Image 1 (cartoon, one colour):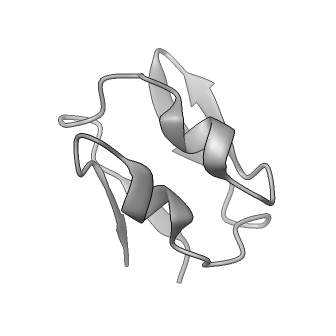
Image 2 (spheres, rainbow, N blue to C red; image 1 turned 135 degrees about the vertical axis):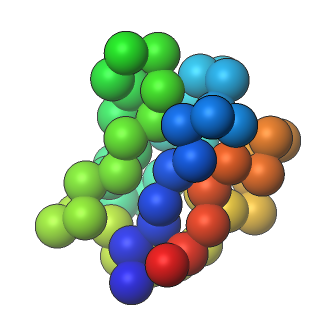
Image 3 (cartoon, one colour; image 1 turned 90 degrees about the horizontal axis):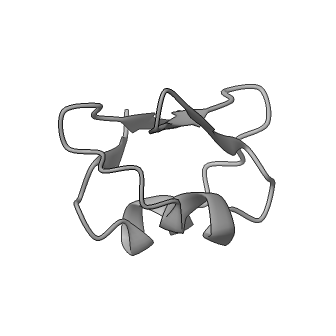
Length: 57
């Protein structure tokens, strides 16, 4: 299951964008957006998000 971003918690820091090895995360309206087709379920974004705004479904 791909990562899911909680837009209420996301502050737009872009830490997850920098850490994603598959470049599946981009920014949209100052929030992280995960491309479910590209996400490889590695959970690096979950581990590195300082706001705990990303979880695996």
